[in-house]
Figure 1 (cartoon, rainbow, N blue to C red):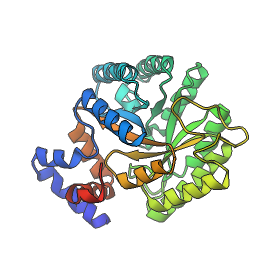
Figure 2: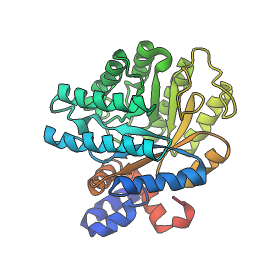
Figure 3: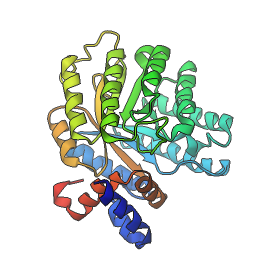
Figure 4: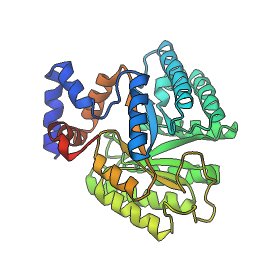
Length: 325
């Protein structure tokens, strides 16, 4: 699996851009907002799932570039409202200039988050590499301190620090703590992160348990069958079902468009059969919808950072009958 993924990564950069586009179109909604809206309408009608929308791009080189993301996310909020979509926002802080001008980045994000709150739209701060882990968590805490509580973050199970981050956020926010838990796509150094499959999975299960026991809301973001099975067992052991309210003592209040304390989250175009099976069983499922003009850079960066992603993508491309979008 790892070798195959690395071969794909080496081949794709020398292939014509349109070939990369054929691969990418399974998991990127398109270049513009209208394409993303069309996909969400179709998937919502067919499967009853909800969505997280991401405008592609990150780590800008100057603050002038941040205006693109400010304006596009503003349009995105309007589109969610106008089309009555069950959708959240996914935001990368470095796209707003976090590593260039922290105060301007804060100001841009605060205005965006406040507008989203006016329409009961939740905002998920995506987690990037370890350089901005603490800064991203601090943004969430700062926004909550200002009364902007429709904001949560992503934590990555591969990082050694994640259990401590779970405790710190839960201690600070109590029942308003809201996480997306994923393995983490960034290949971090061995001195700060797990780098092997089984330790990463074990850490994922342990972090999920910690989050659930804290009463936090959890977006369980994985395509890994053993982890999904473990998550279902953990939910059952706590009496958390799709049918009833969240039974955990100290659990947070229900949010518009969210499940009873949890939801499963999956990427567009990856293992759609698992997504549909979970949804058919009644579990709340949220699909990650990335779009934007920078689809090529996004695709190549993600494949370089984690070649195993190429396995799922290439299988979907070469054998589409095994995985409908």
